[in-house]
Amino acid sequence: MAKLAEYIGWRILKRKRKGVDREVRVHNFGTAKSAAILFDTTVENSFPVIHEFRKFIDKQGIRCSAFGYVPEKEIPQEMLLRKNYSFITRKDLNWYRRPRGEVTENFYSCDPDMLIDFTFQSLLELQFLVQLSTARFKIGCYTEQENDYDLMINITGKECEIGYFAEQVKHYISMLHPSK
Image (cartoon, rainbow, N blue to C red):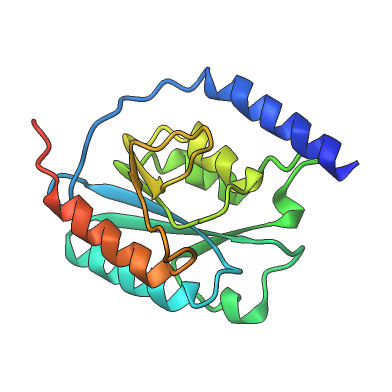
């Protein structure tokens, strides 16, 4: 039954993605005014890396929101103490794993210049957020699967090393010189 629900979820996502109208625009840390970060809390050492990356973004003068996915029904105690982090849990998913609720609405309403996806697996739950977002510039890890990223960073040989990915994002975004 879970496989059927996932199959239906991917089909619904593909259909809904066609209705998303977004203005694609390249941004670097000098031109972006807002950013959203997506991450999977099950990735080892994700919190320290995301926290440092957020501090880096804040120093650039960019308003930043961070959204984590917790594949449990409740947010663990240690995550509740995190200020300015929002979490989506299994309880926030419908039967075909589409996120809903207040945190999801906040994610869609933030409408960032940059969306940085720190997930390395193509989780349906998070792909709903990535692909239905109207962010102008979407950054993620390289994948052969159909996706909605405007910039993909290939970290071959360093899979699931979130710290390395964060450094690569900083490096490549800093190199961009978007036209006005």
